[in-house]
Image (cartoon, rainbow, N blue to C red; front, side):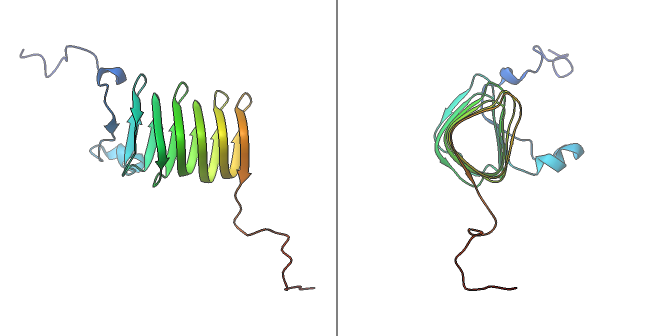
Length: 155
């Protein structure tokens, strides 16, 4: 018993705690750069249904089913991860599968193992060799339609 604080009985593994775990709030100096975003990690083998609130970064290694997720800055779907539903983020990286509607206000990156099923809206799109998009892509722009039938003509 006296050695347990120094030698844990089981090695620490991501599967050792099958719970949704928020990021550790800046208790390590190096964690402040990325740790400032409130992060929700759904680990491998974990399935979550419902709503996600107050998270700024969502990392999906297992399965998440959500009707609508707002307020996220970053979505990362790991290889083998599955997100089903609707989500709106600034940046998205898909190495697993998203099935539903994804709006990436800035950039969407589909890795070689990634699959996007349904509707994807984004400002910038990057698809690696092997990445799959099945469905509808809508490109967002900073300006309204560039070919307006407006009244301003400058020569």
